[in-house]
Amino acid sequence: MANTTSAKKATRKIARRTAVNKTRRTRVRGYIRKVEEAIASGDQEVAAAALKAAQPEMMRAAGKGVFHSNTVARKMSRLSRRVKAISA
View 1 (cartoon, one colour):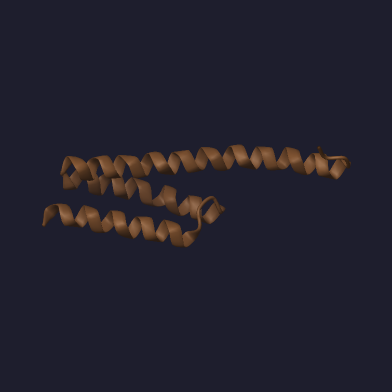
View 2 (tube, rainbow, N blue to C red):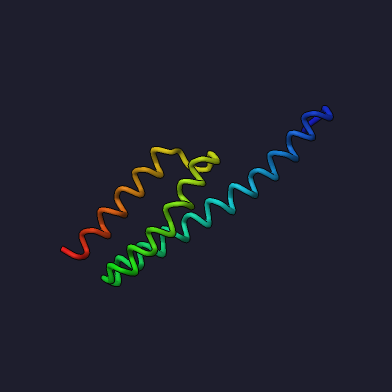
């Protein structure tokens, strides 16, 4: 357990940030799940709309440091490629 006052404060700050980051991570995963479900249903319009809604959330999470920016870029690239493949 933390001994100094500053260490105790740091522990409290870490706990708050962890809660916020966990919420953001869960939110992004939910958006990704919606895109994947739309892809599975085979409806390109719904999938494209879901992807368009998911992109800002994913970029926001990358900007806040919840996910690495390369991870988000990779996921968006793969999802958009799968959405485009539906019409083919």
